[in-house]
Amino acid sequence: MLEEYREWARPHLDRLSRPFLRFAPRTLSWTSFLLSVVGAVAFGLLGLAGPRVTPVAPALFLLAGVAIFLGGVFDALDGHVARRRHLESPSGDLLDHVLDRYADLALLLGIAVSGWADPFLALLALVSLLLVSYMGTQAQAVLGRRQYRGLLGRADRILLLSLVSWLMGFWVLGNLLFPGPWSLPYRFLIAGITLTPVDLVLVYFVVAGQVTAVYRARRTWRELLPPPSPPPATPPDPRAGDAGNSSKGA
Image (cartoon, rainbow, N blue to C red):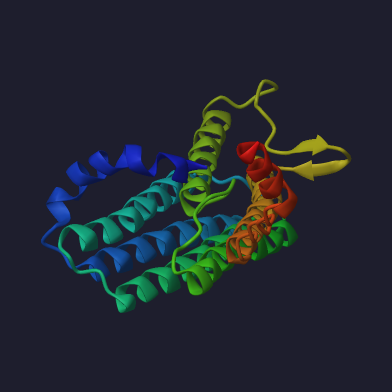
């Protein structure tokens, strides 16, 4: 949904990109990918403690949130810098998309082994994210332009993962600093299923991802259909012309 604000964000990206204009766009793409890997590793390290909540957990959650968010910022900057420096190229576009998909894979794998999410939900979320991206690039292959619209673009999932990481970081920190009966539980029973806030984000990824993939596929299909043919012209009635001539002669 954040893709709707692309034009609004353009002047802000202009200002933000100024310090990075001396860097090659590919350097920014790799920086985005490496930051996503840092976020994935931070989630993975949470799983080393098993079911226990350790004092380092808040720092890992907050690190994951910062790394994911900055990775999203650099992901937006690489294409913007390429356009401003007139360095756009098919190879750069390919590298950007390949690294984005590997970043998605790393993040979902890190979340799956973190102990704070259902691994099966993480797998379903990964499938949905890959389908969303595939439908966008498939539109580019057949139409010549990429589809960005839908409930779950890349900016949406980067923001949601960052927010839930920060939320969990402060949540765990609060429970560690102020233990007692007023501590907030990390898991909730919803419709008979135990879910964490991270699980809820993954559920949204699954549902919104499928909706977005179908929406992009239908939109692309409609644009591929030929335009409707105009109705055939009705030939003039010769009797109407004879009647007009007769009246003039009279």
